[in-house]
Length: 219
Image (cartoon, rainbow, N blue to C red; front, side, top):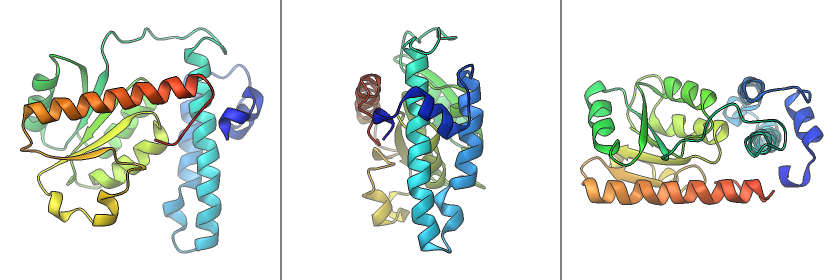
C-alpha cells in the first residue's frame, strides 16, 4: 500500500527521480496505466490478476506523490487552489454541456469535455477535479469505459453517470460502487442533481483528507 511506502519507493514504482514534477507523475502514470490496464489482458486470467495488482500499486503511488507535492512535502505547489470545487462534465452533445455549465456554474467551477478521451486528457492535466459527471452513450468510448479509466487517472475524484438510459446499464455495473458513486437520470431534476454532486464533493474531500494523512483507500 502507498501509505506504507516511502516517497522514494513511490517514485521508483513510477520510474521517476526526486526532481520529478506533477507533470512527470501524470506522464509516467499514463504510460504505465496503458501498459498494465487489466482490460488488455482479459484473455489470460492469471496475467489479468497480476496486472490488477500492478495497476493498484501504480495508482496508489501516483496519488500519494500528488498529495505529497500539493501539501508542500515534496516541493512548492505550482497551482493555486480553487475557491470552489470543480466539476468535469463529459458529453458528446454540445448543447447538453452548455446547459450543464450554465446550471452548475452558480455553485461550482465547471469544466467540459466532448468525449471520454477528452475527459481523460483533462484529468491528466488537472489533479484538482472534485466530481465527474459523465454521459453514458458516447462514440468511441462510452461513459462506463471512461469512468473506469478515470478511476485510475484520478482516484480521488467522485464519478457520477448521468444518463437517459438507466435501464440499459448492466446490474453488475450499476452495483459496482468501486468506480461508480451514483447513477442519475437526466430527467432527475435540479434539486437531486445538486444534492448528488454535493455528496460527491464531500466524498472527494474526505478521500483527500485520508490521503494527506497516509490512509489511502480506493474510492
